[in-house]
Image (cartoon, rainbow, N blue to C red; front, side, top):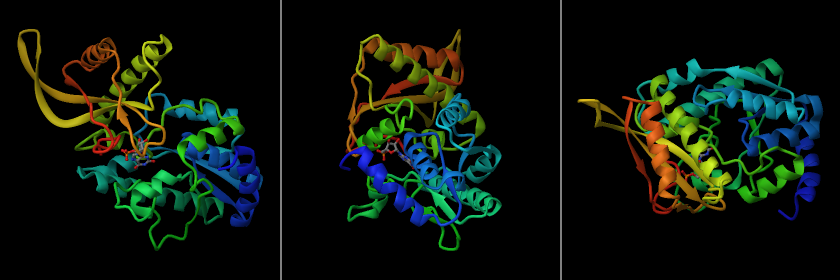
Length: 315
Ligand code: XMP
């Protein structure tokens, strides 16, 4: 990308030619799809409608935050409450690729219904370059299928429009700044949401544990960052592990679950380095997670693996 202003200038006529009528925008509240939504609305005005799906797999407070973000940017949008559908689609599934496939298919079916209601077949997505490169779109082996890539089945009448597919994250951030999106440096959050941070079965109870643990990691890392005790990492989150482990409460042994904390430095998510936060930050995180999820989480680990050989997410 030469510069954001030039990119915007080129993107608007391209979007107008790709969207002859109306278009839905799959908007997750992340900077990629928010940038795609703003560009689309600039290009085609009220022929665009952003759809935000509450999957039940979101972080704490996410729906309110996304509403505020869309309103601040003057986006026309709707919120779909689809938690029950997503939990039904994920019932009994532990395989990460199968989770992504089912989440992708559930999204597509929902968008097909909404597209019919809105009278369009165009679906705008905020896909960026690492999404399709890592999904095997280039000559490299597939690392993992990002749920928003290749998710449109051949029998679907939806036609994808992807205005950001050649951009990398640092370019998206520059674009987001140029478009006036608040918090352009906010950490990325995967489209399949907490489902890929709940290893093993995805149940409402397990997602809630992951949600609380993720909130605690975010709060403590941001506190340390504001206090100047560590740099702002690229991503910082918690993963609920598929294991039962023993802990102690009072005089009793209890069996609970374990969480791994992941904090990484990166510039584009293609490679990453495990961060080395001050031990006091990790101790506070562990103390809070085991207290606020007392009896449910009895052990907290820290992941020290770089990417490669690991990936950023655990699934
Ligand atoms: P990995 O785990 O592959 O992640 O090293 C690279 C970046 O992509 C995010 N991620 C996803 N984003 N759909 C998304 O939209 C996905 O299925 C997905 N999986 C991983 C991850 O959070 C990191 O920023």
